[in-house]
Length: 393
Image (tube, rainbow, N blue to C red):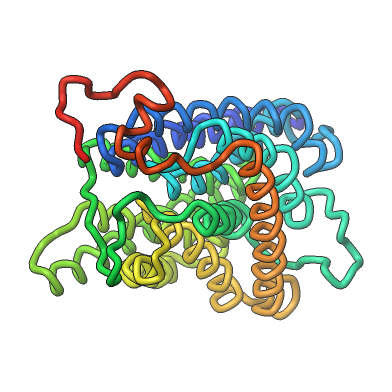
């Protein structure tokens, strides 16, 4: 019987890992659809190299730093590794999407390596893993089932650091503060990418329960996936309603980002809530996307895919929501959630900023204006995704 639990949980981890890997083409399609046609090949190349480099870096160094050792009694240690490996690239995907259309490939790949062997593993260590800060004043008691803070906010803080260094795209903002709208190039790809991410989230959150081999754990997995989906539905719905009330139009890119915001927000505690609380959490998540996308533009923080609003802001909100709606006065407290957010914020932003500055000395992060005008596809990859189309300027 014990062997059967081991086999079932091993299979479950491998299945969840496969769903999470679907988020690789999810991020790639979403970003490829949101950028201009002259930058699509570069975006796809960056996403592919992030998966390759980050996964190998985590295999060789990052996993051991995060968890201390590979031993696992409840399932195959190889399955446990693969499940955790599936997460690591998502941190860098969040960051890379927000600096699309002006980031060079070599520096972002170098940062992906550093994030996979050092930055992300340390965040995991102090939250889910070996915990070298245990019994210090920084010992975290943050509940974050699948990474609203550990993954999404970490990637968001790295993105904020990168945007502050690299600046906006050529021509994005006028001298008197006006925002130049740069429309998405391929709405079908945006939609496909968002739904691949949505499907991958079921493995992302459901797999983080850790076991499905008993009645109790099976119920926990099912509830987690139900609540995950519900929050995404609520986030998309509120953005659709607000957008129509304001403009009498439905903006599919914002609706999808609202859904993704709801999914990020629920990620910290989908196993802790009944079936109605995720509606409220997702509604607030979608509302935050609706409000923060134009707010970041007012600050001239150019984010082509809305990752700051979706991942950073909603990663924070989702982690706080656990303290608000699931505080039990013992293991889960609002202060514990706040402390976790602050510790990760200070570490992830400062270390990311430091390493990006260092990389920028040897390999400039930003393409110059002429290269941006030409398009990153030809400059960085030597091929265009849509060679028969007339290039947009």
